[in-house]
Structure formats: structure tokens, C-alpha cells
Amino acid sequence: MGISIREIASVFMVMFAIIDISGSTPIIMDLKAKGKKIEPAKAALGSFLLFMVFLFAGNGMLALFGVSITEFATAGALIIFALALEMILGIEIFKYNDSPNGSPTIVPLIFPLIAGAGALTTMLSLRAEYEVINVVVGVALNMIVVYIVMRKIDWLERALGKGTIYLLRKFFGIILLAMSVKLFMTNIVKLLE
Image 1: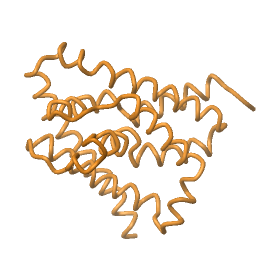
Image 2: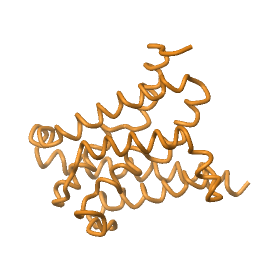
Image 3: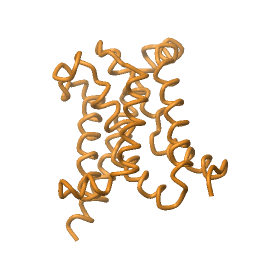
Image 4: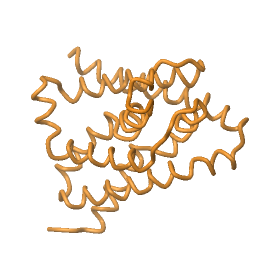
């Protein structure tokens, strides 16, 4: 069938909702406030590459390690839970200095915020429903949006102000906590069946 604007738009909208980069902005701002170096180009490109690997080899990779999608999603929920606790309680759980240059670009930005368990699992569903080329283009367009939002995070921070950012961090921390509990409970029930 080839390239289809309708399919690209559908993939874009589904992935945009799942990635939810706008909902991740308080987390990104929080990381910057802690003095962590955010690299928008690396985060967008790294996420895109992870999506592509998962698109073409996701089921096989997980099977190779004897891990199911459900187990993968449960692990992602635990990471999101830890991020939420950091935001709500103002504590540091992740030690970013053990990654190259002390950067949070890989964890938690690429995984689980941008290319989280839900988004990666969605890739497998989209592949079954749409032409692969349309999935690739839809994801690429999302990575452009991710790059722009992360690149303009300083402007967003100035526009919102420190008080608003503090409130957003706590509010989205609670939302993130609720999402992690929902993701965990949904998948743990499947694991226990």
C-alpha cells in the first residue's frame, strides 16, 4: 500500500498521546533545576532508535531474554513510580552520575519517559495494524515534537515562573504516581493469572 497520510496521522496521534511529552515537561524542568544536563537531540534520536529497534525486533528481543511484554511493562511501571516519588517528595532516587557525563538523557528521559513500556508496546500493535513506513514516519514526526519541546524548555520555564513549576512538579508527580500504579496493577494481574 505504501505511504498513507491517514495512517501517518493516526500513528502520530496515538504515539503523541502515549509519549505525552507535554506531561513530561515538569520532570524535564525538575532535572534541569537539579543541574542535570539535558540533551534534546540525543534524547530524540536515542528514543527514535529505540522505537525502531523495538518496531522490528521487539518481540524477538524480549523472547530472547525470556521476558514478556507484561513483565516489561511492569518493570517500566516501577521506574515511573520511582520518578514520581522523586517529584513528590523532593528526594533523589536515581543517581545520574553513574551515566556518561552524569546525564539523565538515557534514564529517565529516553526510558521510561519518551520511549516507555507503554509506548514500546504500542509500537508492536501499530506494526500489526499499519504499513511499517507509515509507523516510522509517524514516530519520526513525534521525535521532532519531542526535540522542539525539550529544546524550548528554558523558555517554558521562564514563561511559567518558579512557583508554577513547583506546583506543576508536585501535581504531575501525583499524576505520574497514579499512572505507575495503574500500569503496575494492570500488568501484575495479567502476570498472576
